[in-house]
Image (cartoon, rainbow, N blue to C red; front, top):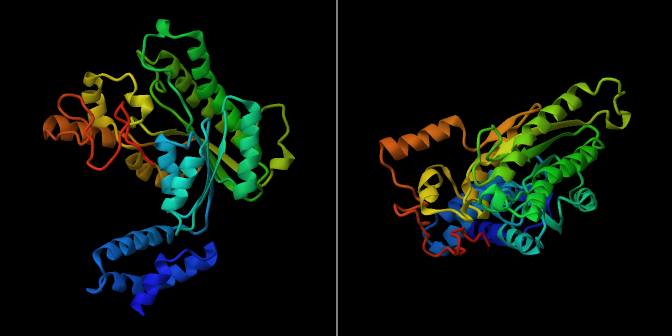
Length: 358
């Protein structure tokens, strides 16, 4: 009986709804089987992973539809990974071909309930973003969460050394791209009668004002996003004076929020970095993409109301990290005393120190 349960769990999954009911009913038997002395160690590990995955998916009342821009790498890829682990249906897009990322995620979550799709999208192009919205509607039906994650910083260097092409590219992706994606997301979501949906605009350095030397252009684009979000919150909740409510949107509730992943060990953070910056603040406050996603995805799913600020680096987390580093003397697990990235044995890294995800 235990061996049969193991086989059913580790075999290719049945259709999603049937597979979920069967798997959850089998959990007690599967756990007992995993503890059986006759089960080889490797097999036990596979069972443990599968049980963990099923336990997580048990919390998912029904799959939610998620769109993530810039999802072929970095924290966007980690978000997709985490949503899939919870059994949700995800569309990722990227300016580069997202197919390798899609295949890696399908292989990792092949026995789960989640679904993953990808399309190539230039978020600075209205036509391309419109095609993304249509693609998402066709693949996952209802979009409950749209995460505007795509962004570039143009490199860390003095503003006067930037080419006009770089300035234009940063503004197009970070500001125009968010405007275009938010517009298409809201238009799509307002057609979903009876559905409450959420748009998350990713903020970063410069969002609260103050200087961002080396990232002046990037900071300027991020500074505008809270204003955009606040404006849309008021429009969506109260309407615009002199304009009648859109009857076509009646029955659909759309919310807009800001999302702050903080400092993440990706190309945006490590490109053009110095040992001094890597030691502080990176070595104290930065985190790997999976850690950020594991914290933020549950917060995203739990978000209610309109105009929320969802953050990884909360005040409590910042104070805790400072206390651990400067009072307890705790060493960084990511950066050594010389400002070099600590490389985990068996993992692969790019030349800039970014850990390869797939």
